Image: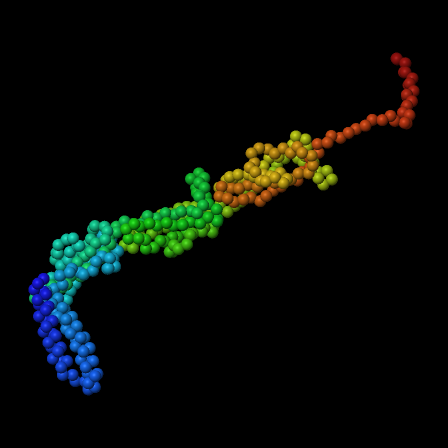
Length: 360
């Protein structure tokens, strides 16, 4: 290190002397004042250049002792896998290349004879340099790599929970699906998906299934090192059919002058069906009440006009149409009277007897 400083000082003095001699005989034609200013500025600038040249010369003679000069935070990392290989090449226009050597960050230099591969996962550095046949060694260069051999983890997440019936997942048409990909080593580069027979495309926004029935979503992710996850798939059946519902009386209603009267003791049953995901709940209301779950047959025992309404919801949220039955309840029994009749009852004459026929 001391020899380095002494040589730098000698070369600096040498170059400074040459600069002073050049400045003493200026060739430009200027005024005295301008010449004085130019001499001062030129001397300062050229002296600095001389020092820089001296330092460069010293580096050429002694070599740069700082290996690669850059830290892992300064150099951008190249994302690779252990399957990635590197080759080294060098050229020298004078005495030609003798050999090329390289080493990992914490290893020893070795001759380059075959492609370089890094097996250990994580962030590391590769140092490399060439040496010519005259013994000149190149200042080491650095390549920062991030080795990742693990594929991303990827999953499909529905916004609304799926309903599974007999092993088949059902969903409504309004449901959306988010693809979540995670790679802790180098990060996710891209996510792809396809629906049914469509070509794969890049994932950007939540997926929505437009077609009713069974749909197949395929999805995968690739990290920045090129590792791709196995293609995953999920079959989701979109139920876009609403349930059907009906209100059935135990006895038929009686139409009297345009009104439907129920017989005494009548009750009403509510039946709902759904051939896709199945019926989740049935709701009923009577007159001005709020909808409430249907649990048993409905009996109305209040005098007057009434309205029964019912609706059904399937297991993915589809609602049926609201059906209703209007009926009248008559709880007042009829009355009857009896009175004496003022007309005399008519008596009919008995028929005259017929003569008998003598026996023979």
